Image (cartoon, rainbow, N blue to C red):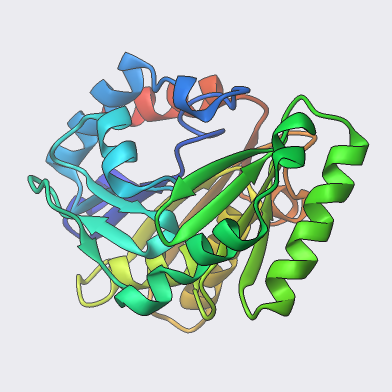
Length: 252
């Protein structure tokens, strides 16, 4: 479908849990070489090939390491165009500082002893607790309540809670902005998490409104992912390796 009219086709993929496996420490995640090869080949053929991630955009561009791709990081707050290196940041400095100010005010040595790891992603602060117990998760929920009471946005992922500046549209807004004005009529999108569900729903709305003609949603299922993503997906795979096989098939 994508290759029937490549000049009006886009392939958009999440990274963690989709191109590569979720690991206990995010910095240890590795995108397989075959994913890079396939994406690079497809970028030569399709109008748009993009990676959309919750990681800072410079981090995800280093992980995937294919210069011809478009990279969207921090759930749409940052963009690197194909061949570029300096990210475009879609947030003013005052709003970007809100979440780090909250962490400075509320951070506690107990967070470390409880197994909570804070990942500073600039305008977004992520609290990870993979490997910790239910009491730690309860503590993370208490922190989320404090952040929400401070006017910040909360978003839950797979053993991660993100504290975001208010009013972010996340990946849903990111994919819509990415496609705007490019004449894209066919889209394939792959993801595994709640942020990917939001993007998938937005893409379905775009198809229903006639902004795009054809849409294929690929869900990488897991016990930690949202069941709603699996329910609306056209293709469901149970492992990132299966998505990589599909990419290899497309790349030929």
